[in-house]
Amino acid sequence: MAPSVDERVKVARARRRDAKTQSYTWWIAGTATTVLFACAAVIVSPDGGPFETPVNDASFIAHLQHNARWQAGEVPFFKGWTIGDVQRLSGIRVSNQGGIPECSLPEVDVPESFDARQRWPRCFPPVFEMGNCSASWALAAAASVSHRLCISNRPSRLSAQQLLSCEREFGQGCDGGSLDTVWKYMKQSGLVTEHCFPYQAADDVPCATCGTEEPNRVASVCKVSTAGSIRREIFLNGPVLAPVMLMNDFLLYRGGIYQETRTASQLVTPDRQRQLHAVTLLGWGIDGEQEYWIIENSFGQGWGEDGYAKVKRDGVLLEEPGARPPNGRRTAAERPPNGRRTAAERPPNGRRTAAELPTGEYSVLRSMPRFVFAGTPANPKVLNFGGR
Image (cartoon, one colour):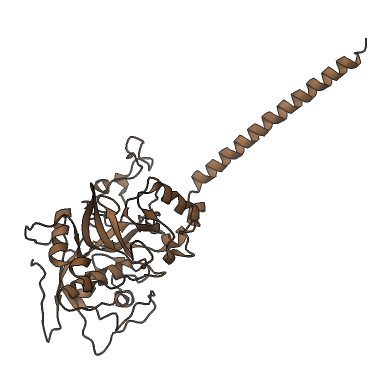
């Protein structure tokens, strides 16, 4: 007996319903598969997107303004720069050739807060903008010596360009330089003034000095090893050189007390090493219960507070003991079998503390040099800051 019209309609509706359900199921499965592949692509290639992200990314700035405890904003120095452009700058390193001894300092009481700019105001001209050149090692070294020269009543702004153009034993110009061996050049050759050899943010400028100007030489260098001795050194003698870890949110700092946000990323060099940046350390302070250091940077006056910053203690400023091994990497024996640490071995925030960094022959994390100036051999003038 042939089915009635009503029965044929019911069967057709059931078939359409089954087909629709099957189609919906496949659409869900297809979408889920696409999402999984997208996640896999992000995990396998983490640098693809962030590498080309503008430093002055509006959404990232808005995120920081909402979540950071300090002020963030667009920085003129990084206009047109991507995160990849910053990471292509090699940063600074330590050669393990410096052999810098510890400083000998008297036990003196220091104030709770101190700012070298207030004690010696005439010794701090506007900060430099380093340009498209990994020159923080040269700018910070020249600045710290210039400040101390001014403190000794010999005001001169010394040439960082001379270090970029002339220091070739361990320095590599705009490809970075060594924090400990830069002093070897300054002891042997000395630095002329910025007026004589102005900064040009390039390392293809021929090495030259003014015939009428005698260079300012560094007679001795030493390092301090604790937060207390760093304070005493600055209080007695003036600013020191210091390394900081370069974080992506640090680039957008505009004021307040900087501390890395929970979503901050450590920038790395082209050879995948932590990117370090040299600054001049010139004071300290406390706001409520928050202790901080005061630093002078080389990102221009549009970064931070006219080029300066307050940086949280025990943060990106490397002040704690520990160092990299000579080549900056762990040995094969130090690495776990599969190349990764287990979840139990990782710190809660996914980063090692300064104390966990592998040890080596020389401490980059406590390398805050101090120096003594000498005049020319024909007219020796030794200026001893605090004594050794």
